[in-house]
Image (cartoon, rainbow, N blue to C red):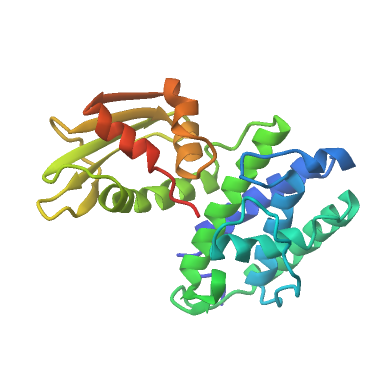
Length: 274
């Protein structure tokens, strides 16, 4: 048996992004590993540590026994504390230690994926020990690693792969979360519609429709007379949805029509990552 067809796109997206990350960091000198990235509180080294750590956990490795410092300003939730452990334990690793561990992790993970024959619905251990399906785990991994590839590209001034396999997984992942953002965080009028028109390497037009009970659904058909419409490029959409930038910082890259106050509330509450 081999990897289930449902899982193959996520494995391919992961492989594409992790190889890109390896290529990006391989030539870095020691000081460049400390560059800040758009991911709050994390340097280049921290992101690579996160990539290594999550892939090791996906392979069943035990989590490190390590006490986090109390002065990490960017760590404010249980989810962030969970993610920070694999990062902080590597904060003093050298550049050769980081690149060699990354390469070894990629080799091990590729071997595991080649031999993966479990059903997509198999329950596996997810973040914070919560059980999720294998499909959910691999989908999240493909999304997460592509976003962090983009963090590294921004920090290192090496743009690219905005339309890679990971970008397409990320598009679908973020769109799945969009109705929840509108229904739970934004006081959108009932029986209304909000249109998102995204351009660039990954382009799409989607309508979030709110019914009379306040429930939101995602549609591909454009809405006539929407309560608000937002037009922005793909990179800006990702940076907003992943909490890499405030909406004020990219206001000149977002065009809104209709109810401007509603559009502003949407942009203020756009982040879906934790």
